[in-house]
Length: 217
Image (cartoon, rainbow, N blue to C red; front, side, top):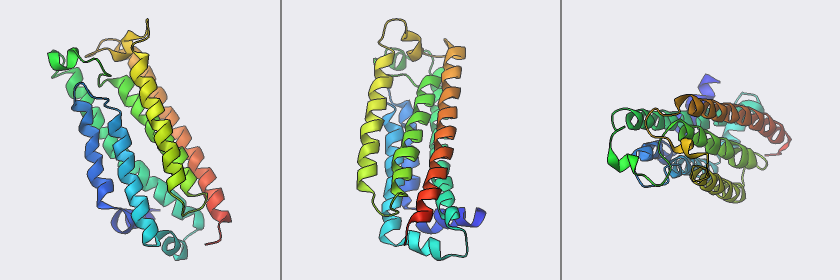
């Protein structure tokens, strides 16, 4: 599995998949829907899938002396690696905004979602949607990219809209708490987001392995 992951990183990946990790730093932008950063990271991964498809990478991988399911697992590992790197940048931005910039008016007077643990958990959910809808959808055919990505776009922006709306609901203002206020509640929501990400990704990978086994390349 280590070798197939290296192959994904060195041969299959698009440079955009790596460059778009930097969109995780959008969590530092005030007055902006910061969860769009998670979408742009997913967009970079999508570009990698597109590049690999045009190079017949899936067929090449299937011809290697490895199990067919390892092709799928290697791709999922690479996707999770990119998402994990982006989440680290997002987490660093959250830490800065909760500590160093906790008294900054440009962040405190932000009408949109603040970068906090709830936002970080919401980013995990968006990545979970990407892994389930797009990556899982791709391995139904191992070729078609458009439909699953359009479905992901719809789901992602609906999730962003819901996340941006929730803190305006009376009684849920704490979701947008600045600094370390309501830290415990937000930590629980972040952990729920992580659990959703892990559970959804694992189930999606298992289903993708089954679908890929049935495809005649």
